[in-house]
Image (tube, rainbow, N blue to C red; front, side):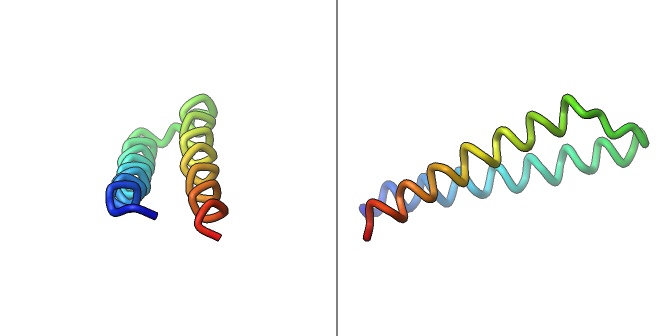
Amino acid sequence: MPSLEKTLAVVMVLTAVLGTIWYLYLELQTNDLNAVGWSIVVMIWFVVLRRLFFLWRRRK
């Protein structure tokens, strides 16, 4: 995997982690666990994990 792909994969995972933590922090402040927001978080993680799996399979 080229260096640029590795860098972009790390940035993608890092932003997903930070976004999830930020959203969890906001939800816990308001004590309102909104299902729509969590479905967006799940969709983002699905895309991230699918991309990482694709990169992993291509490397093999």
